[in-house]
Length: 74
Image (cartoon, rainbow, N blue to C red):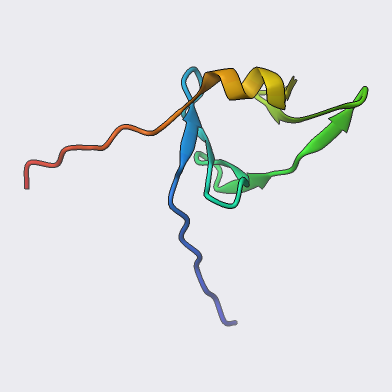
């Protein structure tokens, strides 16, 4: 069986749920499970299911932050 891996750079993450992150292609990923989260249409709104609840893009954009750089002493 052949395998390959793909690496994406995180562009944004949620301030209250840092395990959800977006890359430069505007794809949402759950970093704990490594899965891509699909965009959902619900009641005429576009959004994602974050921690089991639907949240629209308008709500999510207010909470997006750039990830902090990790300082490694080595």
